[in-house]
Length: 409
Image (cartoon, rainbow, N blue to C red):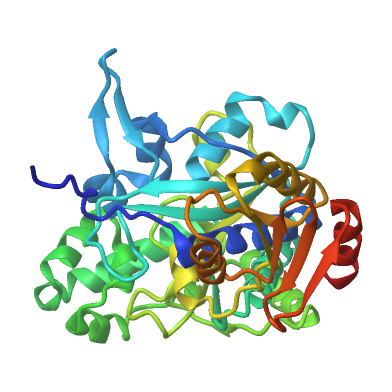
């Protein structure tokens, strides 16, 4: 019979990659907690209307990339392609706005997009992300960016930060009108996809990777030319706060992000080490989205980072804790062996019990393969072997052996 294989674009995360995944997640969680965020665990499926109304019907995500199906109740359901919309939906549905004027939430988990698989990009991928509700101050924008910077710096992943502002909804509306007029005059030189985007989502043309489109958009009007005095002042304050926090940044007036809900601040942390799709973390402000999805007027902002992309860039992992391997000398000593292993674990030692039948030589070979720092031989007495030096010590009871290990490890 032929082997059953995993679906294209999906992956098994194990071994060294699983260690990287968990380390990235743990680092992010600790930093989220330092900034007083609380966790939200979101459902994997949502009503498709959530993403049409938030991400935008004209976006590539909604038009081309979502996994959509009809459930047995006849409802059109989508596997979540991103986390912000679901978090906003939960914020509204669970009436979190009534609990506190400010709500700070973080999440971790799988997202799903039907994209062409490539390095660091899968059809099931994982994100860490965070959202802040109820704060309009530009201090929140600067602090969110600093938090992302803290995560990347702790992971020792070098990136460059690019920032921009889209202004308020009126600024953005005026800019899109001017951009559309500019693109219409040059549509014959744009790619087929960008010709469609002129009508559906003109901002996305600025993100196109086709060289002819990139050359044309170099001459496009800039969003900064359409900002109100209030939006400009807000942007200046954010830059001032970032400088005070020693967060280096590059202003990119062409940075727009592809989702419909962004206003004011947008930002991306970018690397040149994983090809053209080099954004590893990105986000911005979306002050109208809560209201747009049926909630009360609520300023909000957030970010997300792709864990798989961070895994590609992560070079250093903390060393594993030393491993202690317990070997019962004979089958008659199996009970003493399992009790010894249990006692070591209860004392917080990373422990492996050799359960394989065979000679002592074969068991020692396995202990070496597992990377044991120490081996405990269990018989009528306990014997401890240091696998680095080869030195062996005999103990009358396991408690004395454990006290020695506590000192050494």
